[in-house]
Amino acid sequence: MCFQQANIAPPAPVHHAPQQPNAASLSSLSATPQHTTLHSRSFSANKHPALLPNSPAKTLKKQRTFPSSRSAPNQSQTKAGPLPCCAVCLGRHDHCTIDCEATRTWDDIFNTFSKRIHKALFSKANVCLCTKWQCSEGCSEHHALCHICSGCGALTHSAQSCPRAQKAPSANTL
Image 1 (cartoon, one colour):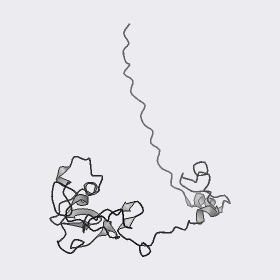
Image 2: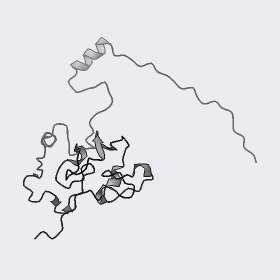
Image 3: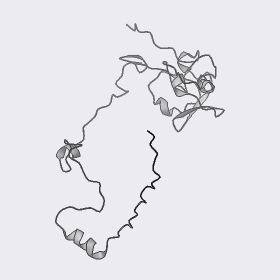
Image 4: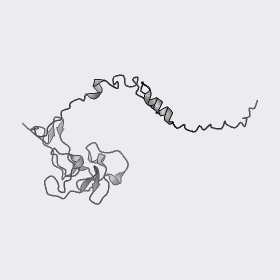
């Protein structure tokens, strides 16, 4: 048995002109005691049962404490081990590495090879460098043109293993 498709046209879409509220309907909205809005989005207590619109928990903020870099006895080492070196200055001192604006390396021997532009990492020749590659874990992406050491420009290593990088302090500091 063979079935044939019937050539039936789909129903034409129905277009409704948007209704503009008139002055009478707007005044009736403002005169009604319940809270009514013209849009369809509303607060759903089912999605966020702990955050009701007028609950005091929504207005209270948690106080957070951040470690002070002044109180750390050894600023180049954390509880988990030594700090990684900065991709720009290659130093392991405590500073905001994502915004490092150094023009010389940590030891003031070399000019920096890279710079930060809006938190992205570029060589001084304006070549975009892979920031994952500069980390000790490395990068598995296949964009070898970006896998350049941000400390010296070598293709064989990253900033963490650059010979110009500040050496990590030994674990036995007793």
